[in-house]
Amino acid sequence: MTTDLRLELPAAPATSSDSDFRLLLAAATVSKLGTAVSSLALPLVAVLALHCSAGQVALLAMLSTVAFLLIGLPVGAWVDRLPKRPVMIAADLVRAVLFGSVPAAWLLGCLTFTQLALVVLLAGAATVFFDVAALSNLPWVVGRPGLTRANAHLVTADAVTQVGGRGAGGFLVALVSAPAAVLVDAVSYLGSAVLLLRIRRPEPAVPPRPAGGSGRGLAGEVRDGLRFVLGDPLLRPIALAGACTNLSIQLCQTVLPVLFARTLHLPDGVLGLFFALGGVGVFLGSLLARPLARRLGAGRVLWLMGLAVAPLGVLVALADRGPLLWCAAGAWLLITLKVGSDNVINVSFRQHATPDHLLGRMNATMRFLLTGALTVGAALAGLLATVASLRAALWAGALGLAVVWVPIYLSPLRGMRDLPGTEH
Image (tube, rainbow, N blue to C red; front, side, top):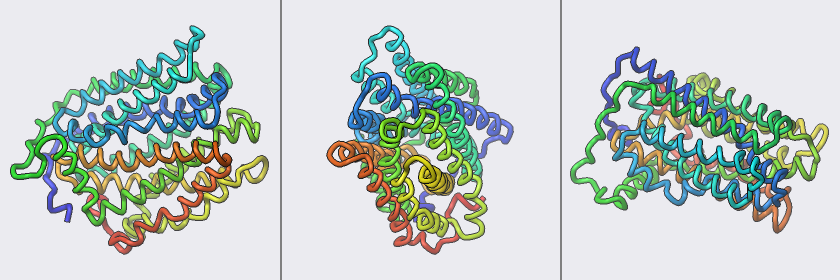
């Protein structure tokens, strides 16, 4: 079992750990608030300021995550060799400069789709480093017994920033234009870097690679991470179900801005409120995850929640003016509630079940699969929107959402009450 390989982290003083986690949580909240604004503003920059096609909007969505496919796996091996917090700070500063260039170019009258594409591609690469380092750093900051509570706080913060950020994003786009709204994201990354710099507690020395392991050289270390995740009977179905969920949701959310703006002719603020409901769903899911896991069992919750939301993608595909828009919004709320619940349970289990020297590679492998699915979903959405219709992409997303529970149901997770790391 994976838990047999676990190496215990030394206990951290409670006051130091709490203070460090508060700074880490504040940094995550600030940066994700800006990211939520730009996740709405950037597609609208393409649609409203640059008059891009649905295919170009889908290309931007694909480029924002393609780095996880291109460099995600080796980044895990690199992060395992490096102190984590300096990697996170450097990634924040790079993203601040990149996103700050968008409103600057727009004010100078020289903003182009090529620049927008380069910004999202390079910022995506920086995000790979940040995310892998942050997930690998968390077990040290809070200790393994505190992982479930810490991840619940992080998922809750993510949800709150999605609600506030996307709602504010729609308001800012209407008030000051989409390119100017992107400036909020640049400032947020600077704020995150400042907060991370205030964490004074030194990181532990990078653990030595175990003698006799197969990780000889970068390629061997990458294979170790892949083998660890894909060879585990519990981690593998979690990865497959998560990838299917991400692929399906990305198919929908890539084309929804175009559908709302060009087909339904809805105000920008409506799109912001629709996506803000997704943040409400993630927030509620993060709150319900632990009570549901205690009552039904952590393993059972993972497939039962997937089965419960299986038919709801149809309502998103039918989104239109009037009552159908309200139905689609309610379905989106419940779909993202499942995502919030899954995030708390799955991330805590993954971090707990992984030995220290493999944390970076495990997280990179999971990000490769989960975020790589976002890239594939964006590309597929653009293809379907171009050769068929926007609705075709939404129906494909609905089909994916209908089967996300199957990998969990066919695995040992189906009847498990407790997963290591989620009992606390």
